[in-house]
Length: 346
Image (cartoon, rainbow, N blue to C red):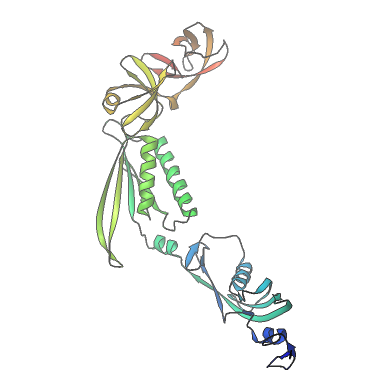
């Protein structure tokens, strides 16, 4: 049988080109003419594959080296290619990446070398551009009810909830999850947001936390990309009762523990039994105080159903019903709320 000859170099081969000529004529790797690293000049976010990613902790040199390495194409038969990058600064925003690509191709060690200019391009990301342009899509309005105004504790808690939710959504990948402005207004709070989606989630969270009713309205403000653009207002009207309120309804003392739609969740005092009140009943319940206003009082003596305590303000003795299963002795302290009918132990 006659041995095959490589048509390129004349060396013996099993079939077609010899392994040396195959390697010399096959493109094992290629490098682009230039690589751009797009970074937001305001927040430091990086654009990867056309999408803005969260700001990272890598310095510019490492970002440039990584971008150069990621841009390299290698032949699918190149086994375990190893890419080494030697980066050199050639300007304030320009680098030159010298690349060594080593691997194994069809049983032979191979090396490819190239150079890639890397440019750092600083622009404003979509999020920062919209924030700078005062862009917003929704406004969450928190308002009190005719029976009571929103108090300072609720306003501060709502602000914290809003900031935490916006930050969480942004870190989850929603570039438009930002707060354009939080402003206290007569009767409540306005939270102006870059995302309608965030506004709806936030309004729902406020209703779950504080109770009340939610009303959503939308206003057409123009067109963009052949689509109508709306701005949404989400009004959360707080209920008459709030968490921690101590109420009397049908002769039973209870503390408001939460809300479920239009239903108020309560825990009876002193038994600790959980139940709920309808909206109609909650609107008629007598409000005696709130747990947030509780004071510490010293126990003087203990009976089966009653505690004798020292009034924390007048230092005179007073009586209060003892909650079921409360284990307390003389000299210890309990939390009490003062009402028009005396003290309630919580």
